[in-house]
Length: 628
Image 1 (spheres, helix red, strand yellow):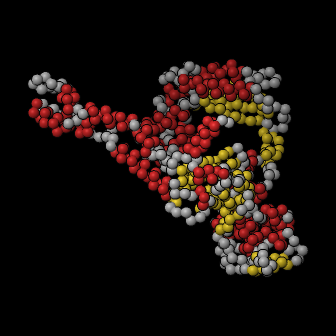
Image 2 (cartoon, rainbow, N blue to C red):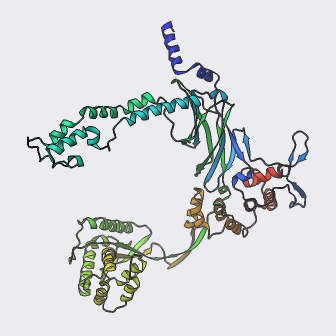
Image 3 (tube, rainbow, N blue to C red):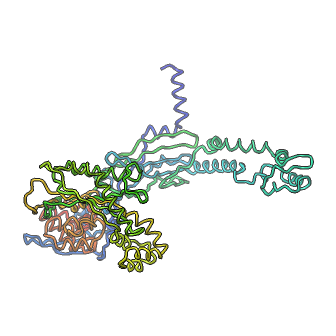
């Protein structure tokens, strides 16, 4: 490298990084992060029992009695001493197990900024970055601004605000802002008294006795130089912002703290709730940052060490055994398919090119094609029923419904004839009509909430003569208008009823077991941690999976009620221990937990993952009993 190149490199470095920042870079000074773990109160455990030390006896299945004391071992003397609860502890380990409750986990960590990164003319920006599978999530930034740096920012913004105030806003009164208004008013008063220009009403058709129009007068008193200057200022806004505000405020930050003096390392407790998903088993956390000086130099800080969070969820206790229900399979099956065919007024001919018909006719053809290609069913017969609404005379509607039914039958006859059974014969097809679908109208009226006189109209439906019936209903003008616009069109339809039979099935009915699809859907929701939807489906099954859904929602009473009827197992006992712990019954919780460990030693390791159990392990020093 020659001297010229070396000089350029040194010059480039010194202009981008001050000596103090260079020292930070050389010594690789970085912010640090550590886990923050709360005591049991922080997990919203509703402990109703006393906080005083307790002592009780646990009797194992082998008859051995264990005295359980709330105590810890003194690391120096080796003696058991009373436990004093701390509200918060910091964990320096790089990984931590956390619990998911209700589809949410809470990440708590401490960010420490070394003293050497805190100077009056510096600003340090820290960005927590979460990695969950292939997803990267940027949390809100932490901004630590030196007092001198902040003072410079405020000064720059004030200068820019003064410049903005010098710009005449767009909503200002034009005449007042950009004209010599006093002299303009005097001139108009003397030479054009009929003008309303000052009031904002222009009329260029009136002139002075010398033929001078309002427009010419306005141009004479217009301050064009002021307009030009104001427009230039508007165009200069972006450039002057960059000139005055060298270091803009950082938006969307969790903390923006001004450090006036250095008192050692800066620590900030960061707490973030995060929705979990099926893939939420491990979350990694890093802190990246940047230091900027007041003089324009900057330094990208190396990212911190990685913290890992391993997420435990009660869905690990789910029973994945499939559920089956007994189902009666009928040889004969009836399927209905309704379409809406629109006809012109008093017409019975189908017009497929009508935009409203294209979609419905296409859907029916597709349905017929699917029936024809079915490997499960033969088509024995088809019934076509044409319905009309009660609007108009009964005699006319009766004729129209019959002719329209026949028209639909002829239109689809070719498609229906293709529904040949294996024997080669086409299905029997018949058509019929319903002149006025009053029963359908009754159902729609009962289901509606937008009627003023619903009860009166329902009574009118009992009138025997259909024409009188419709006439009486029409007297309720507002409700009748709604019926004509919203309900009648729904009644004008054609219904296809397909009478099918299962192929290769001789008996009329067969009893078989099929998978319970409703239960399966509930389990899918449970796996996705959509606990409310899962509980809504699984509540009637009253098994361990429904109890897990309730526990995850915090509905402990409902979960406890279900668990009390289940056969005793390690998982059931463990979940009962969680319920007891939440209610404050620590003695029952410890007994249930130890019994679950007797049935399955893996529960001892699971206990460290759930806050309801882990705090009991610490409080009563249960590790000595679990692992002896």
